[in-house]
Image 1 (cartoon, rainbow, N blue to C red):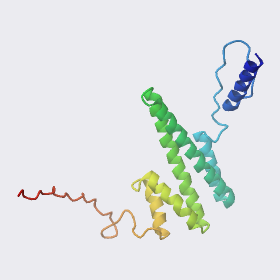
Image 2: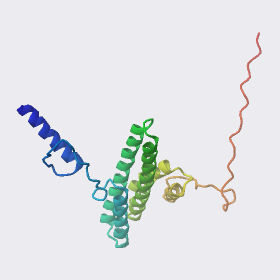
Image 3: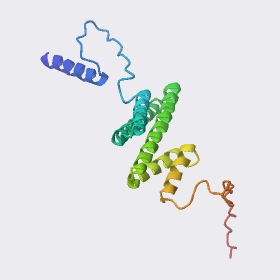
Length: 196
């Protein structure tokens, strides 16, 4: 009997830690629904946006170490959100399409925030004359965003200005217009040698 009571107490303690709520003695058999906590955590999109805004304010006040910390925290928090939302989307795939799609959209939104935070962090490292730290962040942004998006183009332009890449993008023929997209040449099918 004592073992069962201890197990139940342990489970209640673990559950209270997981929910972030203090442990309470339960009377009766019904379990109250947990409260939704949406603003007290860095695992909330709006809260992470506020952290990024604090980084912007620190840059404006020339408090660069504070700004570095805020942008890095925002980047890591958005990254965690991406992973969690993608995981939930996968868990609900084939079970509840609406929840799965909602989680995919939230993951995409968090990925955009992560890339914006990484870009701001890279710009600040560049401003502090630390290109060796800025370059990997910029490469991550280009890989995540795709070079055709505005943020991807901006990150690639920074890489070009730093001398990490040798060609600008989008490239131009005469220096004013982007080069037209050429279709890939069609290769003729391989011919079979004549039978002997």
